[in-house]
Image (cartoon, rainbow, N blue to C red):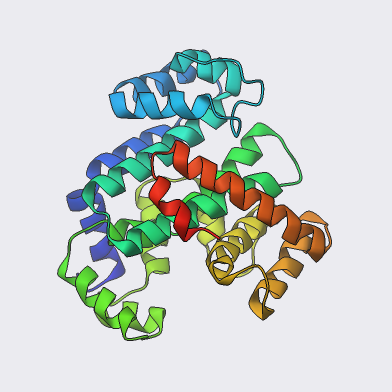
Length: 282
């Protein structure tokens, strides 16, 4: 694999074809008719593991604040909403598929960051309609899909890159040396190849963010990484300023909110069946 396209093709066709196809199927469904509600239910019901995960998440306070017991997928869609169930399905699929392939430390750290960022973006978003909430959640969860997909695979390049990173080689330089491309470029390729939708394409596009929502997603993803070294420091203070602008709050209030949301992210990780990543969260 000597180019971005070669990696995108390899990950899509060789390593993760089922994930690629199911994500494409789910993302192409939009809540416009009853038939799509049934189609979403059918995609989930085709996979027993996914069904049980979605039902488990449907009964967590994060998604179901009414605390009404949910025991079927169609009931979950009716009660909690199409977009929420769609986002549960995507996060469950991602976690299960990648961890079945591998549980290397780099993958666990990336998953911890992705879940932390997704929960932060969803909790911080000021305009609270269901579709927007789930859009930023999935945007943050999949913003580094190239890196997640790469670390889930047993390749020579993964071992080689791991060794370089352990020698403190700057990450982007190390990626170029081993992969002949970067995780960012692979992510952009996968977003197109897997039809992950216009919002994620906007989030991963080069240049300035086009909307408050995509800016918030980018800052949440960056904050999830920086917060591993604590809630203070120059880099964190800059991010607090930027997130404050995104949501129209002062940095001190943002810091308090982030700490509360981090606790929520740990609960979501447990609900997704990966309690081991909670110790990688701040």
